[in-house]
Image (cartoon, rainbow, N blue to C red):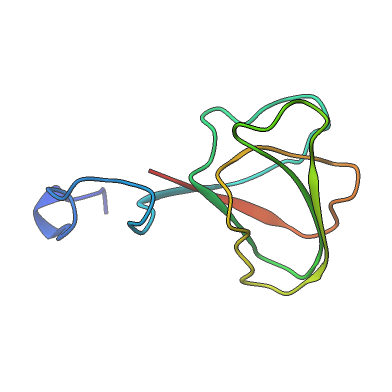
Length: 95
């Protein structure tokens, strides 16, 4: 069944950093390629380690999380999930 805007209670509400996501995708980590678009947030689908580049950090100013559990959401908008240092499976929360 395709998306039905008539059934979406949040479709007419403004989207901001505090609203739930309405679009998502699995991320393939990369040390060089930014997400397109940058993610509103990311969520770990499996436990492991996670290395991210927050959306407004300078290149190289990464943040690493060790031993995160499935369901962990770091408190940053994310422009890159790095392959080096990431062992968790990660999904983007967009819009």
